[in-house]
Length: 255
Image (cartoon, rainbow, N blue to C red; front, side, top):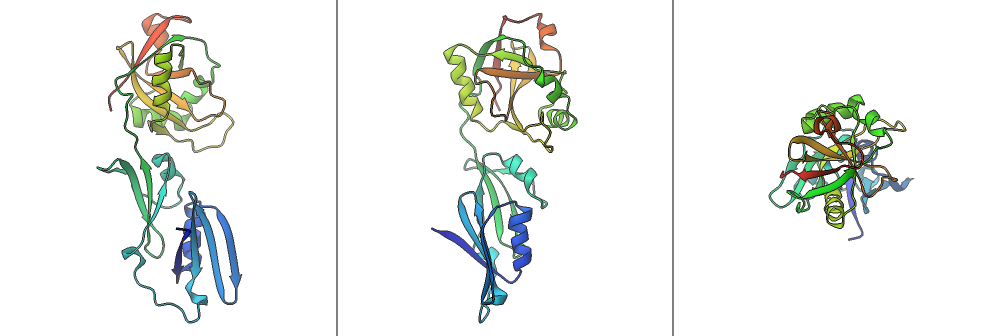
């Protein structure tokens, strides 16, 4: 299939919906006496919107919602929902391995945002590493109002200022960590554009089997591949009496 074309009697409303409200980039557009249209890039698929008012004669249009829907595959369904500029329902899980939400364009065409959920093979696994002093960015991040609120609402953790910095060295733990990073986790969505603000994904764990906590994996380009940062409601170093160089185990919780 080369592209999907929608012809509409509500051209201005429909192109605003796909361009402004859903944020898909325009890759082509034209406005001629005998035709008007815009073409969008929808995650690699081309979606063409045509103005029926300039067709000669105009086409008789049926109910598009009965015969078509647009599917947009995304990596992070919560992030996708936070970025659209229309009211969108909470994502729902399906029995066939996906999470999705659906909105409708002004013509009633369903637009489904869909995230495929990989089978989680890391639950119950353990990451072992040694404590190290971090760059103290975690202290800033965990106390940002928007981040702290999401930690509380989504993880049930009101974070102690800062993160526990764990360096992962042994091959088995590295393998578990690399697999964990490819799973969806719990999204922490950044509403700002500050130099120290970023999105993140979190993974619930227990530290040494005694402290409920979560790994925070920030979405930054230069993040060290063998570094793991942990938040908890208490100061983990003080609670366990551990310091730099000491070993620590992080057990990934079953979801």
